[in-house]
Length: 509
Image 1 (cartoon, rainbow, N blue to C red):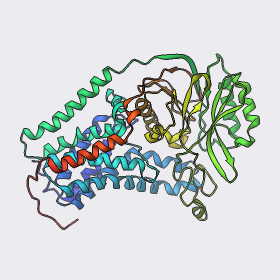
Image 2: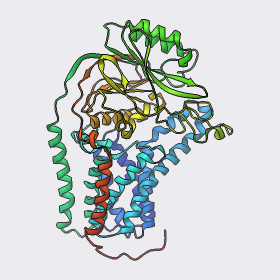
Image 3: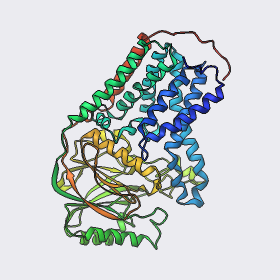
Image 4: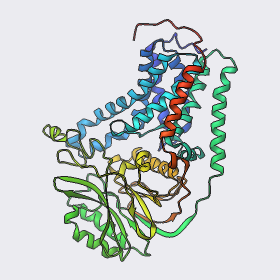
């Protein structure tokens, strides 16, 4: 048994914060997945040493705050684009976002310690509880599943399990493969206590590697897609002196030979509202020389404004329209926006009251000979539920984004990692055009076949991969994973182990 209970509680909290921050290095752009596993293994003995549920909740909150503060450090960068208006909010955004998301994990720690039981039982219960609160984090108040634990596997064969169990199922396997091992470090040292966590860990690894080995090989069509990246810095994007430069740059890339089968411009890439954009659209059509173009543009409809994607057919007609429906809080809209506007608080991407309006929901966009596209604008690709809610099966996923908001550190790379996860989950290729990077073609196994790095202007002509068969996860979605987790929680609660020792209740926090 590790002699943790004799340590001062403040020291345990400090170690928890360090472990949480260290665990975040498993995410992009670092990709040190072992760091995440080490953080999860060693937080468990600290948790089991907590004398009360209240102390367990504090420990979980500090651990998770460290994790999210490191993982989401990029969140300060959007506030520095217009520093005069928003810079004062940057530290508050990081503190409140990290601390707020940490409340979900804190609740899991509190609940598990409240139930109690043997170290192994609590390790298993904490694994399931953390997965359940990750579900909640992805849905409550429109959700924010960024920095989910499953993201650490995106560059490994284990990521292929996303096609079976999705991001929350893979998170559950990650927790179950680590937290019970940490419980063994705290436990009595009997070999029998190591059997279940060792079996779960080895079983998960064998399943992952075996499944990845037998995944089908990706095939490619004869169709080529041009993905354009103008590299417009956010503080210059709408500047009258720079906007024509960026538009001309995209026109040049569009007109380049040889001709592709489809051209994709990034989010809000036309510096005009749709109702007034006819001269711009005519220039695009002329440069495209008969090739269809997908582009991002803003449009108005009475008092409402939308962040939209349109499909220009070979003749320059608008043959398809999609309005973004999953908006970024405090980015594209502000809750109670008209009231907040009286205090000078607006969404960073909009300067009118409540900001952008949400579109009707997920939809398919007819991309002509290339088939049906599932359009995703910016961080809609973060939400697996937005992809699962499509009215039918697409031939490919199509993301346009303006990652200039996310800065140049970790944000754009984490966004790309989550886009790759959606491709694996659905068994569909994804074409991704980003304003400043990373622009990429992603195959149905989540591999980047071609890309244009962050901070570069240019384009890539990428061959479109053929979609795989509909995956298990695409068929069953999250509901069955959630139901299985709830059943496992009850089963472990009632049947696995008994308290090894009764710890006196310490009334101090």
